[in-house]
Amino acid sequence: MSPPIAVAATAAFGADVLERLAERHEIATVLTRPDTPAGRGRKLTASPAKEVAQRLGIPVVEPERLEPELDPGAPVVVAVAYGLIVPDEVLAERTWLNVHPSLLPRWRGAAPVERALMAGDDETGVTIIELVKELDAGPIAAQERFAIAPDDDAGAVFARAAEVAAALLDDVLARPEPAFREQEGEPTYAHKITAEDRRLDLARPARELVNHVRALSPHIGARAELHGRPVTVWRARVGDDGAFEPLEVQPDGKSRMAYDAWLRGLRT
Image (cartoon, rainbow, N blue to C red; front, side, top):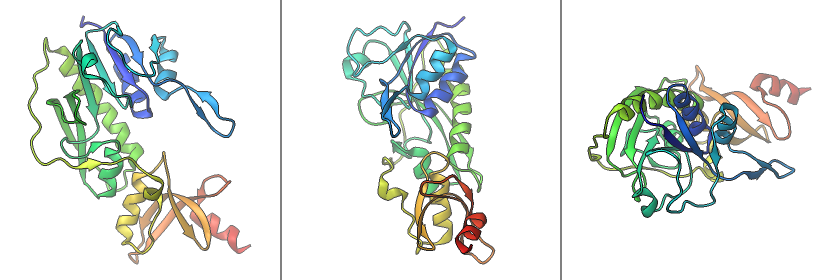
C-alpha cells in the first residue's frame, strides 16, 4: 500500500479532487483555509474542502499561514485550489505537488478554466507540477489534455478536470519518486475574475458573448442589462440568425428562470 498523502485544498475544485483521491488513497490530513464570513448574515462558513473532509472523517488543519515544522502526517502534499502561499522553507520539508486545470504553461494563474473558455479554446487539460515559488512554473510530473465541447460550461470542465487529475495522481503517487520535466513554451496568464470581467458587452460578437457566459457558469454568472433590467445570464447560445440569445437568466433578487419566461413576465 502506498504511503498516506496530505491534501491542501479550499475551493470546490479542490474539494472534488479530494473526494476522488480519498476513494483510493489514505489521506492523513487536509489543509484548508480558515472559515470565512459568507451571506447576508456574515456567518462563518467552512470551505468546500473542509466540508468534504469532515464528512469523510479526515483530520482538518486550518492555518492562517503556513509555517515550517507544520506536520501534515505525510511525505507528499497535493495542493489543489488551496489559495495560500507556501513559503520556500515549507516546500523544502517535503514534496509538494500542485494540480492545475490547464495545459501549462498555458493559463498559469487563478482562473485557468474561465480564461480558457473566454478565449474560445477547444481543448484544455490537467497538469501535475512540483510546487515552486514562481506562479504555476514548476516542472511537470504528468499532463493530460481533453477536448472542450461547444456547450461545456466551467462546471463541466472542472468536473472533467477533477476526474483526470485523480487518475494522473494515481500514476504519479505510485512512483518511488516523481519524474519531472521542465515546462516548454510561452506562458499565458489566467488573471483572477473581477467584477468588470462579469459584465457582458452586448456589442461584441455573439460567439464571444456565449463563451463569456459559459466561462462564468454555474459558479459566478455574467451580468448584463437586457430590456432595461439588470440580470445575471447563466446560459446562452448563438441563435439561428447569428445573434446572441440568452437561455437562462436571473433577475436581481429572484430565482433563475428561462429567458422566455422572464420576457413573458415583463410583458404582463
